[in-house]
Length: 98
Image (cartoon, rainbow, N blue to C red; front, side, top):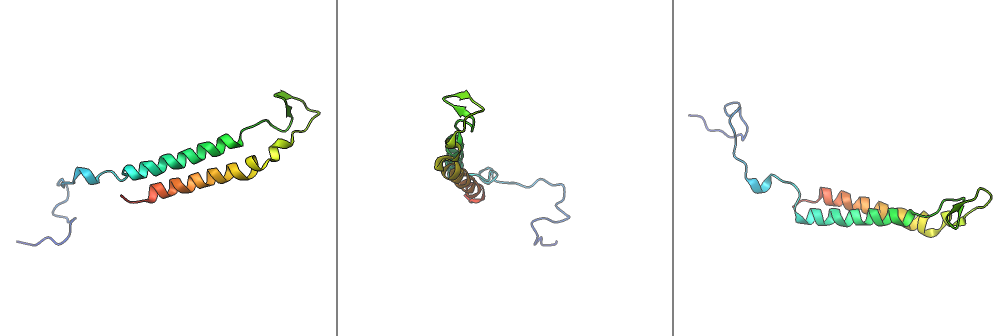
C-alpha cells in the first residue's frame, strides 16, 4: 500500500476526479456588477464623443466652413477619460476574486 501525497499522480491518470459545482465558475455577482459599471462608463464615453464632424454646420455638409466643436473639452478630454476609466474598471472586474 502506498500513500498518495500528490493530488495528481500517474496512478490516478484517466480517472475522473470530483469537483464541486460551486467552484467551477470564476465570476461571481460582484464581478458582473463591476463589469456592468465599466461597460456603462465606456458607453457614456463613446456617447460623449459623438457629434458633428469638422465640416458640418447645422447638420449639413459644407466644405467651405469649419466647425470648432470638434475640439471641445467634452470630446477631447472628458469622453476619452470616461472610456479609459471604463476599461480600468473592466480589468478590475476580471481580476477580482470571489
